Length: 263
Ligand code: PGA
Image (cartoon, rainbow, N blue to C red; front, side):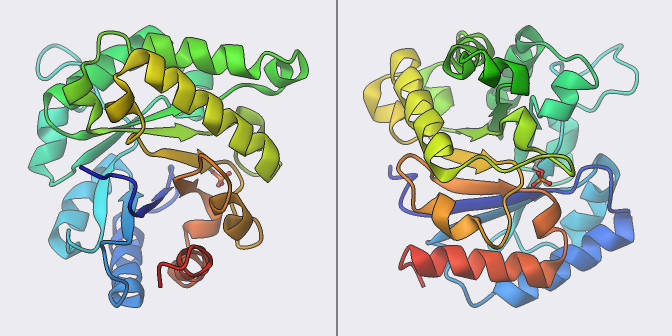
């Protein structure tokens, strides 16, 4: 299996797009990108839960994969307000994001919970997109790598090699995300990606670890996407604001694929 012979590019629409806006976005993105061969790109969108069913009606899964921004660690039971991986699959979702910085920092999710979620998603044969990243003060203290090691070892505790074949990691430094974020320099991001790969090699067998895609996220835009994707260790991009308009997202996708000589 070669998971890294293509570029991974995805967006999380956060709590911005309603159902109609989401389906319009998917239809437009699909149309704009339909000529791009899907053996060079894995394109995915993570809309709000409530839009998933609508997305299932318009999305061509050969063109766009879709999934959730969060997930319950249980499949069923007394967990009011939660959505299980089984329910997500019913709506056609094949990916579930786990541990986005907003989940960790606003909703106080812990690495232990993320670990349970990763297990639950992988046990249900979905792709788990695990987000990790250090906070600004952790970077200032020079402990970014230590934070990433801890997050990876805890969140991926007791995950088998076989399960890791459906794992994707997104490195998103907390200080780089969102309206007040400043993007990581390409050198800084690349160093962290290389470290993450090394840690994955400690957790999983080398063959499996080297195939786990590691995406960079945090203020990716049309200007920095091309340089980030050319850096060692960066297998894809996970984009927020700059991807929410289909035309601009399509431009970024094409820029990235062109610079990698894939189109
Ligand atoms: P941003 O969001 O690209 O708007 O910084 C990234 C993210 O939250 O994943």
